[in-house]
Each structure stands twice: as structure tokens, then as C-alpha cells.
Image (tube, rainbow, N blue to C red; front, side, top):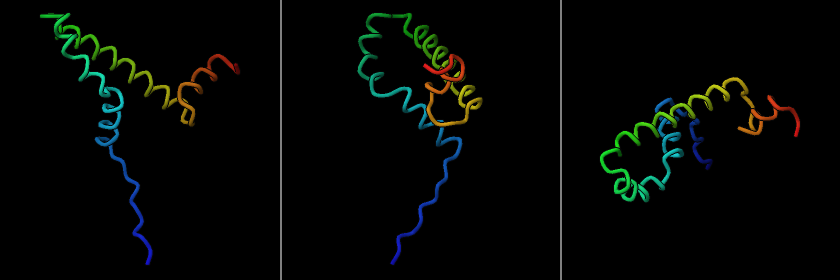
Amino acid sequence: MTAPELRRRLGTADAVLIGLASMIGAGVFAVFGPAAAAAGSGLLIALAAAAFVAYCNATSSARLAARYPVSGGTYVYGRERLGEF
């Protein structure tokens, strides 16, 4: 008896949720209380600024990944632009 073959299927929503989970992590839950106490009424502005920076980071990473579709991540991006180390 053979085990059924698993389907390898990852949709856009799945990829977005995996990406968000890896970016947010568990640290946000540990520091949210002290950050709220320190920022006070500016907390929403600080969160919006952090979200904007995270969006810019994710967008640039996605563009680099599309330009260099090989394994190696940020090492490959640096090697392609700066040469061998």
C-alpha cells in the first residue's frame, strides 16, 4: 500500500500569510504593551510608520527576488551588484 501523494499547491493568499507571519513574529506581542506605554497617543502614528517601512522592505525584497530568481537570497543580491567577496 502506498501513501497518497501530497499536492504541492501554494496560492497567493497562502504566500501572503506565510510572509506576514515570518515578518511579524512573536516579538510584536511581547513589546506592544511597553511600546504603548512609551508612545502614548502617538502609538498609531508609530505603527503606521513601521508598517510603511515594512512595506518598502517587502516591496524591494520582492523586486530583487523577481530580478534574481535563484536560491541564495540576500547573498545573491549583494554578489551580483558588488562582485565576489
